[in-house]
Image (cartoon, rainbow, N blue to C red):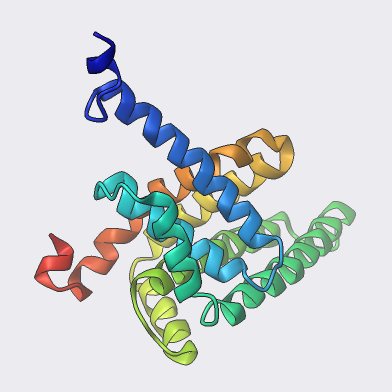
Amino acid sequence: MFRKLLDPDNPLMITLSQITDCVFLSLFWVLGCFPLVTLGASWAALYDAAYRCFRQGDKHSWGRFFHSFRRNLKPGIVPGLLMLSAFAGGGWGLIRVWNGCAAGSLSWAFFCLAILLAVAALGMFSLMFAVLSRFENPLPQLLKNTLLLSLAHFPRTLLLGLLTGGAMYLCLRYLFPLFFLPAFACLTASVLVEPIFKPFLTREEAA
């Protein structure tokens, strides 16, 4: 009985293994983001590991994360810093718009537009790190491809932005979700992102 219970192919063991992978991948992502300049590499590695391990059955989640992290370490520096700059500037701008609306100098419709743009920007950055994890592009091409894909699939971009924004809020507000939500959010994001990538993959990769 115990031998069957501890069998790696047992559904219970598979579930426990996936939960463990989810927790450790999330913690690896948090640690990878601490230096700030490695944020892009950490985000790309988390997406790659979550997609490969949870959806394609790769059993080496930790090795996959660190392999992808090393591969994207240099290419991810500028995209990560761009996101940090946009996050800081966008947050400051939203506060100014909110204060203007509260004071009556701006319309609340303007604030709704600002929120829409912020969600779209979050979705674009999420897509950019996913592109970084799957394709090798120089920085100008990475930015161009991300912009074109985001505009061509704008509803998915907005959903990605809502997913990313919601996960960030929960992690910052309660902290405990940091132990599992980053990996789970990337896994959920892959449902939106992979259909975008499918036309650009070889037949073997798409399969």
